[in-house]
Image 1 (cartoon, rainbow, N blue to C red):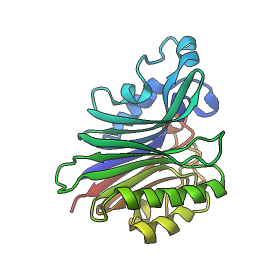
Image 2 (image 1 turned 90 degrees about the vertical axis):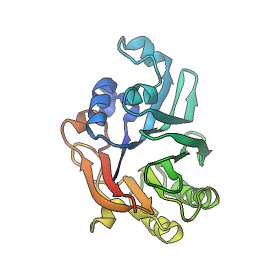
Image 3 (image 1 turned 120 degrees about the horizontal axis):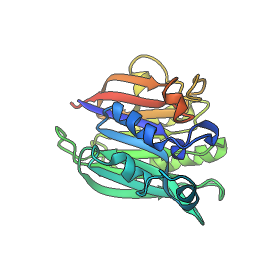
Length: 247
């Protein structure tokens, strides 16, 4: 059994940036007990927040969140500014064999990337490939990014290798499923359980199906969306989790 989770952590701040919550967020993330975690909007560095908040972690957020639980982690820096940067991260209990951050930016003011890791997961003859995605808010840009995602996976992930693609797709209309399923053989975990991609935004009362977990070569045993208190006090997105069966 393999457990995974995905969460847009809003750079460690509550909705509307009312307060810094990265310490509470770390404890809540650990309660999911996931083997692999896909994170979006991870703050790698922010000098102004560090100066303003006495308890701002000294380590980058992905290292702070992983400490003592996930022995391997990778960070893909996407948005860079004078006082810092943020991007995607993957935390894992298993060794990470390789890391690549693929730039899929379409608009200069909206930097986006795909963080790809190959992991040595127990029970698998081939490396487990994981892609953490955070796609555009704009439909035209997302369409280009779906194509870029499909091309990247086609070129870098063997067809018989197990694959997980998770993250914040900002996919208001559900078009990603129509592309990724037939072209890449990916299955969305909630759809595999007999429903539709779960509503995940806003976290207090989810209305929109923005966040996803797609799998290939793995069976879905269970999946859940984590919304409402206390989750909604920690990010504007709900977290998603799934338990997967290794063939």
